[in-house]
Length: 185
Image (cartoon, rainbow, N blue to C red; front, side, top):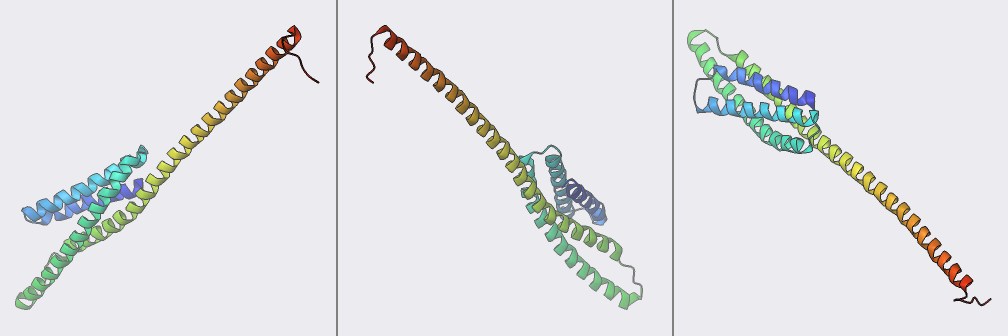
């Protein structure tokens, strides 16, 4: 998961670099915010794995769901933008004969977005599995400690019962030897 969260952070930051070509506005701000949140989610996932924090992995899983929706939405936006650009470039080509469109930037965005969406999707399952395994380890340790405590108390109880029986037997023998009790044979 460290590798996946590192890759997610890298893809999100690479996407930030690819959207620098957009004009300033609300869409660019929204995309920057979504990419930075996805990068932060990757960093939290890496920290959760590194320090074995189950709650951080749960937060990471929830953030991954949000990140996945953002990445898929951006893939769809990029595809729509690519279609509009191809129509524009086709019109430019017929009118001028000059075909100089920004296909490289769009191709790089699509590659980064597809890699990010696959990475986010896979990391969701890995984070869930790790959170469950950390919880299982904690429960196993707790169960072992409870079992150990029960056996210790059983051993202590058996020792105390044996001492009590020995004391009763000794007192009974003293009463018989003093003549206070008579045994019938």
